[in-house]
Image 1 (cartoon, rainbow, N blue to C red):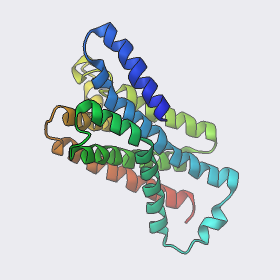
Image 2: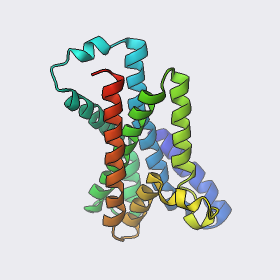
Image 3: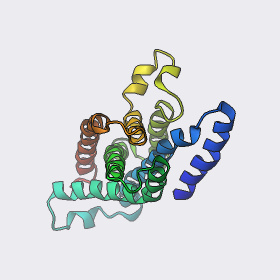
Length: 219
């Protein structure tokens, strides 16, 4: 995953920067890192599908001596932890580029990644629970969500460059909020507001994922 991040950042950003004539390198860095977090977070849904249809672990899961809600929350927490760990190299690279590697703002960077991953893990678990009759269906739903998060956000362009009819969709995209929070770190601006915006949708998606998982796994 870090190799993919490095390719996105150093190859794509360098190429685009030469084409458009401004520092695209710093601009695309947060988006590349959050895409890595998104890919890692969606592994949670894929793992759940494999448990149900490939490994047939349902009977084992029912014997675990933990409350159902605790088990569901632990699955979400595990997915978030995996995403944060997968993005540690990328987050440190961005912190270095932004000059905050030895600053308390580095903690804020990991908070942003963690909150964003929390919502995506919930979406992943909800998607596999609601639609995953096959791995192909899950992959299709996952791709649709990833396309929305990636290309209808401000990873590549400002909101103003999108058609007016699309701008509200871009402005309400969780990826946009996470990216804006990351860029505020580099600009030494306040990150409190963009981070706080992420809290409500991330918690809502995580709750949806937990409920769907309890139903899907028949726990």
